Image 1 (spheres, rainbow, N blue to C red):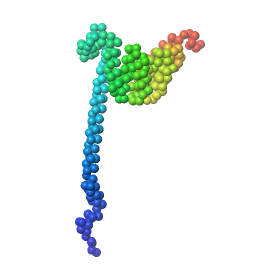
Image 2: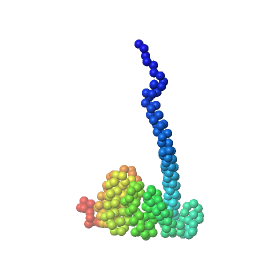
Image 3: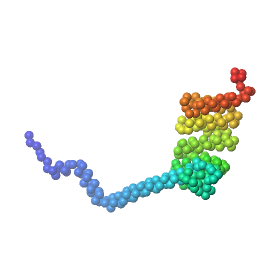
Length: 259
């Protein structure tokens, strides 16, 4: 039985891949001006992305530097013999002549970082510390505004929880005990809150005792102790606080069994 041999030309004429390549080449030839423009646009877009990334990296670095300076001043030491003009006059560790001077210097950097990088993590962290600093300086209205913007805004949850913790004390000191309780109880119930629940429980207990709710404070401390590891860093402190509150209870509040 004989076979029919196909020529190379005939084989190529039936090759679908070859046909697509030919069409693509023809499309390029017919539209090379448009394709050239598209290529230029792609290059410009890629350069723009690179420039934007470099700009954002630069801003992030600048934010970190500004925030770092504020943090260094916020945690600086206070000494009567410190220089009034240069906190670094005696070395690499900043020193200030007074608490007010220290917090005023820190507030300047925190304000710059918060205003210049407000939407980023550095900006939110700076706003949190600015709020703390303003509390130290007695600027309660501005402090509350900054802490609430961090506590109830979007972004880093840890910084938000820390702001709520600070606000709880501020609310309690301002007479808003209910607001303080709500913030702390909400964080204690929140499984995503990464602040130790024992710490929050002790803070809540202090506020409850100040509000005349000693029994409720003891209950909160017991719940925190039961949820805490036996050898946890807070457990002994929780048990000692429970014992202190129970021993300080007035006789009129004690049951017959306790007497």
